[in-house]
Length: 142
Image (cartoon, rainbow, N blue to C red; front, side):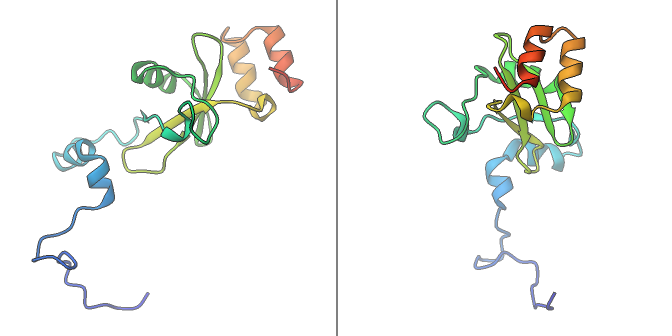
């Protein structure tokens, strides 16, 4: 990386540092970090407009922030993704947003065969899905 004469001052301002995009989007998280508190390991449910009705991604069946946070916290983790089943039986996938707030958005699983077998087995074992549902999902049916 080439050396620069960057003094650390805000670029193009009167010496005031400019806010980063993260500080503009997530001011509560920035304040929490500045005050010495940190919950970096706690995932936070952050719905995405991409998955809202009329959006350009798969539908998000989660209706409230509270429901989303509960499902995320109690979900089945596989790598960076988290899976769970809504109260109405819809399997959802939580995807990390790769932002400093440790946010995850969710959407309905559209290809059941994409759910890892270990996750399905655990859902079956925990009573989240029935044996009939498990077999349908493993065959690629909903």
